[in-house]
Length: 76
Image (cartoon, rainbow, N blue to C red; front, side, top):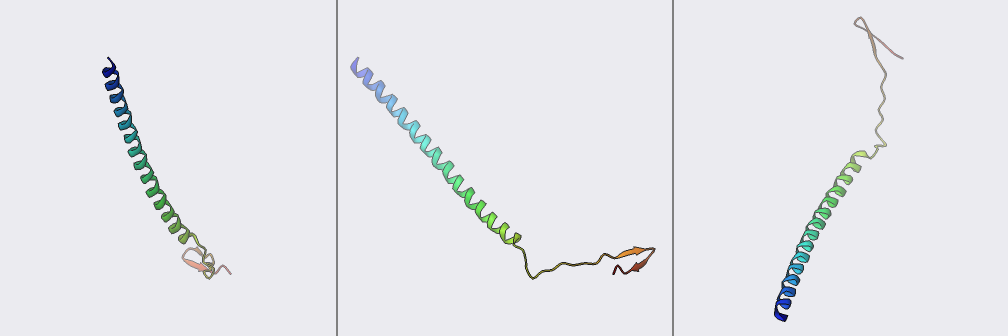
């Protein structure tokens, strides 16, 4: 009877260790995915910041041109 309880305890302990190992693998996989996604996110944010930087030497100015019946009238 004592050996039965020992074997039962041993089997339960092995199952618990296997489940803990499975959870650690799952955690490592999720952590790796999170790390990769955060790296990609930071790369994309840096690229976006390079596009959003204002250009100090670029001046956009225009004069509206109105056209009436094929004639172009100066707006100034």
